[in-house]
Length: 278
Image: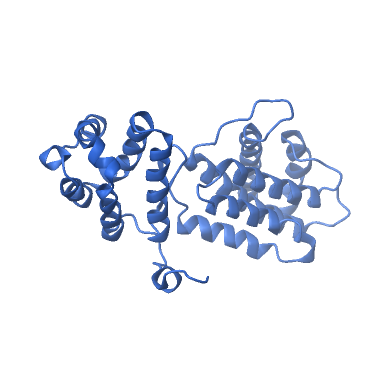
């Protein structure tokens, strides 16, 4: 990318960090901005009330804020990001609050910190490496021409998750579409639903797994599949219905990861069954 810093292009940490001295130093530098000198006398006690941590010297000077940011516990540091956004939104205006949020977002992203910041300044865990391996594994299984329409949907889910901020709702919907596509490939002219899972998939269990123990476990997985579909439909937009809010990050990541696992399982079953079966 023309004009980008060398370290961002070539020395970016390969693994997301839970905390970072560089991040704290860069966030601390933000307190030299005039907006904080104008609000320091009220912001410091606000922080203390909200997160229960006192600032050195009551936070009247940027050096005291820098000391606090560099030395506080990781949870207090992350809470401070949110609480400052909230304070600025209420007392300095939306523009100042957004400046703080976007500056912190940029620092977190550039330093590859293991958190994302939502539009309201809330900090959430970023997607972990195990989640990525699960998604990549699902894509790796779906390499035949038969599955060419499924992979872009998984990649779309990943794109929504990597956005700044992450769009968990659209990512979940994209994964649901991928699972629907896989189900409809296996059972042509059939739409994915709880009833159709029971009607179409359950009878295949005894054919696919002759061992009784495996059959019992697989049938329990079918029940879990039905529950996953029910949960996913909560976040699917229905025409004429009010748009649902963003799902919590941890629930969305669990659901999307489960969807990737279901895709791999459906693909393996699909490979084993005759194509004419409906």
